[in-house]
View 1: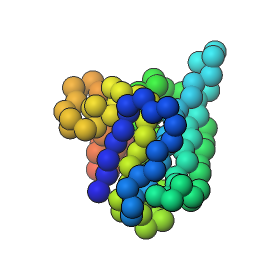
View 2: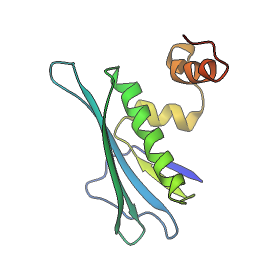
View 3: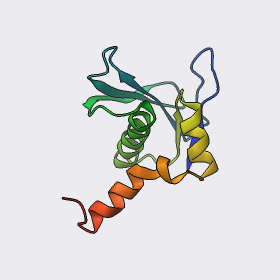
Amino acid sequence: HLAFSSKTEQRWQRPDSGWVKINVDGFVSKNNTKAAIGGAMQNSDGEWLKGFNMVTGMDEIFRIEAQVIIEGMKLAWLKGYKQVKINCDNVMLTDTICDGHVLRGSNKIADCLANAAIGKLN
């Protein structure tokens, strides 16, 4: 189970019992030469479970924040958590994921991954 939230919250709110919440964000340096992602996972009691951060390749913020969601989900699922709520401040990204419809130009990441799986990339 996966849930997304992009609404503005004044303070951190606990997920429902049995769920974990991952707050994620992407960052691009002021001179647009570096990008990074990070996230924090907590349980329904508000206890810190895991955090992560990494420097990524430079890209548009939509893709950088999509990457942080993927990394957060991978981390949660590798740790055995199957009910995950993700908080992200990119409304367009969360709306795209929740609606399930993307324009072809916005689907380049999935297209690239699919092509890589069949060895079409150099």
